[in-house]
Image (cartoon, rainbow, N blue to C red):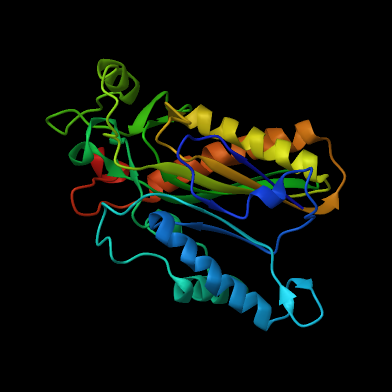
Length: 287
């Protein structure tokens, strides 16, 4: 069972309309998080082929049609813009997933070209990445995988400070993205260069399609806790919620775990990232 909420103002998605609770689709077989801007949606073709070969999908008589949803982020200005997710990469990602390859946080997958804090221009960004985290209460669990590529700064609530984001002119401190946006309140140009936080919540709770959609909404609160500002016009913040249906639980209980998982997955992404080109990572910035 899957739900989705798109809260950012510049989304790039595939097949998310089918997840609306009023529509017929009950389940999905894969969710893709990718870089490459709209080009990255090509990865879905490889995922479709991999699953069809293994007869995973809706049986339509002549073949099996997988339900595959996707969301992309804009990262073309970090590294070589000609290298972006394609069908081959989507197929390879499935091979890795099915072979139980060890998860890697930081500069991997959709986090490869991710950056943070674009409010002051490309030379003041920092390196983003992809991260994960999961929490459990007795037999109920909820985890999250999040790719962090946002306009705003990353705030660590436990530490009580910004740990990554737009840097000052001398590159040694934080400019405060919210303050920078206010300073430019008359400027309507797209000076943010392209952004977005993408994620997927995974839980063993048994939820309806409408509840899964609401759970995705709860997950967006995890972004709001950590990214300042979040859900801007130039972000395409998208959260999927996948439910395996094994444990009866209230939606609010699942939401507590999921929101916390999203928050800490974002921190994992940022703390695991390593510097690339002109983009310093949080771990090196504080050395």
